[in-house]
Length: 609
Ligand code: AGP
Image (cartoon, rainbow, N blue to C red; front, side, top):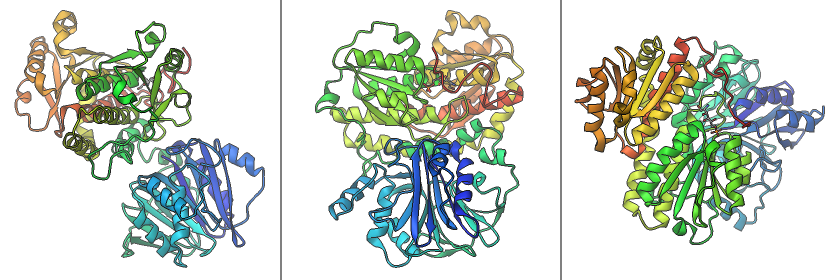
């Protein structure tokens, strides 16, 4: 997730761009840059580091000009560096483009452009857009951009300018957010409203597949076929702080609702065109390595550890490789039994968790190959692992991890499928079916998020209790652990997860009349067992909420409340089941009047031991 901003009008563009980028740093902050049309030239200033580093690089100088674009980056393709910072130009400096999203087919396009003599300055996917603009130039910026869009595939919000057609800004939206700000003799575009709120409250919200031609006196919107579109002006009533949360009350709620986009983005570019293969070009495994792996150790902390538990179930099922999942703060002090064919997978949203990093370093010293699944390109874990699969969730601000967890699951599914393919365990038909179900997850998550009001009321009812129990069997137990962690860490209510079959070995003693029990019931093979465990707690007076598959008519007879989730294959259930649990925790925390985004005693990244 990155932040883009564009301006055209009477003001000094640099001031508007820097001020807008400052409001977008929550979308990404590993590098920043601006491009301004200055008396016949497109002038660029960009650098690795936060916006402050860019301002330092400008060192008080002002590029004069009234047309410009700017970018604050959250790296996906290419590490944080000066060269990879946006904006990007082509071979000459006639064009400048800033981009938020992922161009899935950039490698193939880059090869073609290299073959036709283009030279590239960066490792990014975005740069190919600038070279395509050069290659396809028609003499008019708008029609050239339409031709470029016919060539690229993926998710993008773009702002584009050129010295060859000055006085125009073109902005495009496909899968990544984009708004147009309407001023008096000036106009703006940005990833999000906060960037332009100080200048205007009149906004056009760009929809999927829309393109805007912006001048200082006009904004015309079209579909990608060039058909004109009439759009309604949206009057923004939020204050700047609320705007940064996209109108949500807390970052956590915003990030819960970003999960459909984050899940889609994390799959982007990693599935073959025919949907029958997983591609992980970021894995630089030696020839035969995938076939030789004979054990996997997944090591992580907190929510990332819970993702690892789901990963174990799926990797073992699809590859038959034995997987151990370990808490980083324990594993780092153990002398684990490993061989040259043991693969270590560390999972860390921040990439800076001290125990996880220490465990990684210990394994590197033992000569073990380490694969990192992380949300932060350029983090310590990303830099020190042998290979990295980046989750494209974008910056996660709230201490409670939500979109990072679901995108970690996506990364683990892709890894399991990749390993299964490489080891000849999975045929194309199976992979195709699994990937088809994965591609349906974003829409199914959207459907679940519509149940928020019902979940909010349930959370209010449960929040009067000082205890809650989360039960599940099989993969449901792994999700129950995550649900309990979410619940306790932000509502401060004692919550624990239990393997449903384990209740009678102790925890049942804690079940009293009315206590909330959340039972996860998607493991089909263990359904009857799960129902009988529910009956055990019901017999002791528990108040049971079940999370079950839509169409399950039986479960309602055994519990007090049911939240149905749309059906998918059991292996993928955690991606859907966790959303109601995240919302339950969120609304319980709100009901208790807590600081949801910054819960007491906790930090977003535990960089100390
Ligand atoms: C998540 O809700 C927690 N705040 C916490 O457990 C977190 O998952 C854990 O600290 C690991 O962080 P990491 O993924 O950045 O390594």
